[in-house]
Length: 135
Length: 390
Image (cartoon, rainbow over all chains, first blue to last red; front, top):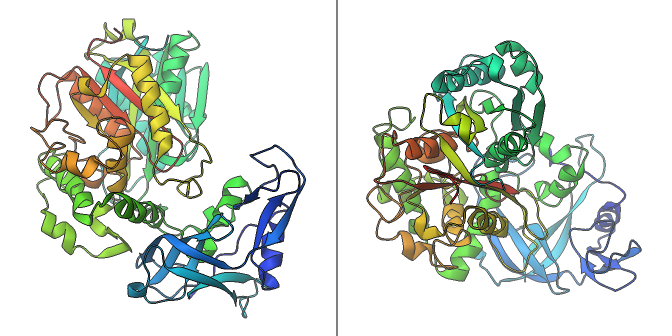
């Protein structure tokens, strides 16, 4: 099985992956108006400010939608896998893999984030992915 | 005013297959030659070329092979299959403004025997641009195929509106019924039943195999010139009554997941513009070609374009409305599920045939045909008419 696809990381997104490496799920926040945002970007769509920071999420949320992926193969994954759109309690939405059986997942289910180090011996360096568990 | 200024005068295509056995450039050249022959023009008449950003054959490479002497206009449209109708819009705008006289829109690929879009593309995830950055929020978590990205929207649509997998399946059944009587279709002579749809294997739950379009090799080309000149050429013109692009708020490529609601509001942008330009309404469309890489988005398009209300598409199609003989037959060539997946360009060719009255599945008394391009991405659409602007 080939290795997990690495995220393209740049200076607008590095804070997120630095967070997962420390066991934190980070959400970009606007230092001018306080708006939270995911996925992140260099400007605040609400107020236009370029000054931004982040908050650490509680790691709690619920399933907005989900799929069970059977085909075709996905690098670094043993199929089938459950992938969800998760509404975080803080009010932003993100995609995540859910470590559960396909028949256990449903829209509205409560989830809690955990972290999975996938760097292993594939020579691609450190990477920690959020992984979600049923609560 | 763009409406009525230009027309699609010629259409051409290669055969549609799973292994063309020749280069993507050759496929495009063959399609352009066929399209020019269709309307009685020659390469020396062409002064503009347009295609998809994704196409691997550049405008100058195509021009060289065809012996087109000089180009005064060349352009590319981004965002995958969302580009299809926008290539015609580009051509129509060039013609309407006098920038060019004859523009050919082309798309050719070996999408089955070469790079397959349905597989997980590591290259797409690692490209160093904002698309690569956007994909960082999905691919590492295992969401990396077009089918999976659509399945996520489909699941929520089912939850919100009570739609079922059978509702999606009715789109596949309609397309395959139409393909069954189209000799150019890969699935010629092979209709399916709803039971067969339900029994087909899961790709990404809730999408079955038969909810997914084909993977195809082939090319299509379209010749666009002024409506006035088109009337003097070999074929009845398909007048471009409207040509629109659309991108919605907080738009992504296949993963516009961060809006409050699910759906494809970018197609609503296209629809409103099509109605505005053409001064037509959904009731005045006799047949449509709705981009069908995956069945759920056909239902959502019917809603966004105003053929029915939000969440009403399952009821709208339940009585066979989208099949031949129904209120709004769609994808009469068999669609990308039944004929071939040529990134939406084969659907535009079918819309032209419906306007000409030459489709193998001809709808009665066609005046106006609506065509859409790729869904889930920034997209485009056309209204083609027999008589043009009102």
